[in-house]
Amino acid sequence: MNQYYWEIAVEFSFSDEQIALFESAARRIASLGLVRASSGNVSCRVDSSHFLISESRSWLADLTSEQVAVCRLEDCECINDKTPSIETAFHQGVLQQRGDINVVLHFQTVSTTAAACHKNGEINFNLIPEIPFYIGQIATVPFIVPGTPGLARAVVSAMKEHD
Image 1 (cartoon, rainbow, N blue to C red):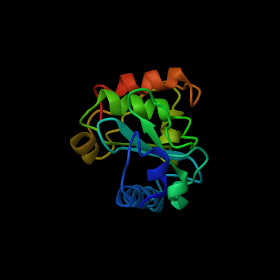
Image 2 (image 1 turned 180 degrees about the vertical axis):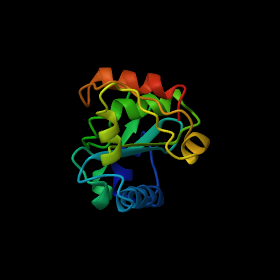
Image 3 (image 1 turned 30 degrees about the horizontal axis):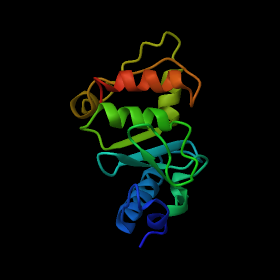
Image 4 (image 1 turned 180 degrees about the horizontal axis):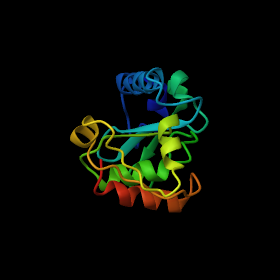
């Protein structure tokens, strides 16, 4: 049985398999080169009331069960004494507002960072036909300091109508 089960059994329980799958997904994300160093975080809805999220300062390439925070979807409260990512508020907001989304991946690639620095901010992301077909219109938000309520509000607002 998962070591966290005993700590939070009254409120929530989950299986070793759920944690193992979350860890495996985080490592796969890193192996695909989507994150550099510790620059990225991932969350996953596990039931109607809770989500898992990578711990602050963790590296997805090396994520372990000790670095997985369990948070309540209702109020974003971490219930297993971990320090979740500073971006937990927008993960929670997206999961709360979009019942059709079960996973949120936040990452910065070199190419998207370069595109975001475009002088006039007008970026045509449809460089290949697969982007509009599979991804659709890409939402953007202005630079807002990471981990702030303002960034969380902007991301959640943008995600209401974008995937």
